[in-house]
Amino acid sequence: MKVRSVQHEMLPETTVDDRSRQAAVVSLRRLLNTQVRPRNVELYEREGRPAWERRHGRAPETAEEIRAAFFESRRYRFWSATHRAAQEMIWIAAGEPVFRDLERLEATAERLASSPERRGGLELAPAGYVPPGEVADVDIHLQPGGYAMTRSARDVACGALYENGGNVFAFGQGLGKADSKAGAVIRHLEGARPGLKPRRILDLGCSAGGAACHYAAYYPDAEVHAVDIGEAMLRYAHARAESLDVRVFFHQMNAADLRFRDGEFDLVVSHNLLHEIGRDNRRAMMREAFRVCEPGGLVVHQDVPTRFEPTPVRQVERAWDTRFNGEAHWSTYSGDDLLADMGAAGFPPEALEETRLDKVAGPGGWYLVLGRKPG
Amino acid sequence: MKAAEAIVTLASLTRGPRPFSFENREAEEVLNVALALLVELGVAFDRIDRLERLLAERTGISLDDLRATDYDGAAGAERQAARDALMARVLRIALDARVPSDGRG
Ligand SMILES: C[S@@+](CC[C@H](N)C(=O)[O-])C[C@H]1O[C@@H](n2cnc3c(N)ncnc32)[C@H](O)[C@@H]1O
Image (cartoon, rainbow over all chains, first blue to last red; front, side, top):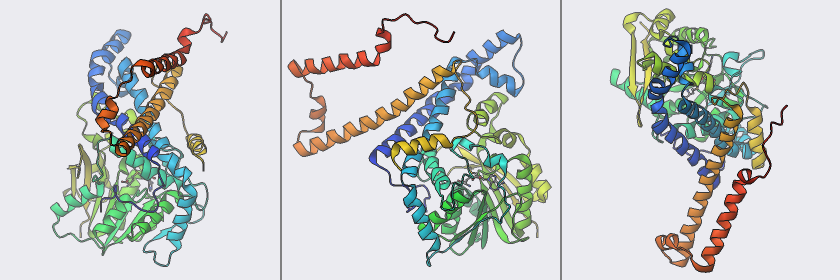
């Protein structure tokens, strides 16, 4: 199943003009990403750094100073302002059809979730649960209202925004319809463990359930569970999975504090969660992933490849998202020793692997850290 | 929900600061308006393209011929006048007779 290309009932009705508008934003972002942004480091060397040096009488050293030196370049400022505007326009272009069609989407979700033919489920958090503010209170990558926005007991807007905005975003990165993070991880796992056939899979930080549905479709005999923090996101994810006719059980939980028993799963995965969770919760999440994994099972965390940026200047260039794209935890993610954290979570060093994965389709790659639980 | 209400809702749900990059925040806001208009221009061009294709299909005139049709004479003069008016409308600020003054003080 190519998760980005599938049609399902939880997608909003779009007009030709909506699709034109989204295509225009994709074009703008593609131009910025392929023609403009790649010049940033050169602009830094040619304009930003010299101007900063003239002002301060020495070379910039700290990340903060390098960041300020980037902004000495007029053309860098133009890129930054335009890139920010393009990111905001993703949400308008993708979100307008969502809100226009929201009543139908809510009714559809209700019907799918209560249908006698439903295959998976949705478990909300018990009373008193508060989603972690480090994520819930920030509009991460500028999604209006953030990941935990829930405006009523029928609301699905957050999930619909996430999926539709995500598609516009991915196409602007040059990723096609065939791209899939789960696909890249499955390919790696099958290379490392031919014949792997997980029985119980847990997906942490599942958002709209794209990866969880991919696992459920790929391993039809496995029972797939998926966790995220927000009610409306998960209500959408569940309805979407039902509409795709795949069986996934969604749970509203903090991944750093799971309500599962020890050793319940033989494969625990996370996709793009490491960079969107604070350090303490990330470490606790790694411990929890280890705990709920059965002896002999696998824990796999996949994320963006920013950790491989070779120089401080390039790291700062990538860290633009921290301030301008609501990526509050981006720099902690890029700088921390995740192998050490996995070790502290319980994995012995010889059971750990850290690697760069190729994408299934499209340019670039992913970061991957994998642990095998001894036993 | 109507389109305008959907857009206003989306804009009102946003949270947190809005960091700007230009030296002048107001200039950056104008850039945002220009970029949004660029997107809308893309939408309008797509629409014109669709109509041209439809017209070509319905009339049997080839798309190339349709697009290569250049008006001269009266029609050409009419287009030029419309173009002149468009420029004047858009560049009205450059034509304004008043002397700029700082209205904040
Ligand atoms: C970029 S999204 C990843 C989405 C999805 N896995 C995918 O690949 O499309 C990160 C997700 O992690 C979730 N998240 C962040 N902190 C979390 C936590 N402590 N517990 C559970 N989910 C969390 C966010 O709510 C968000 O939906």
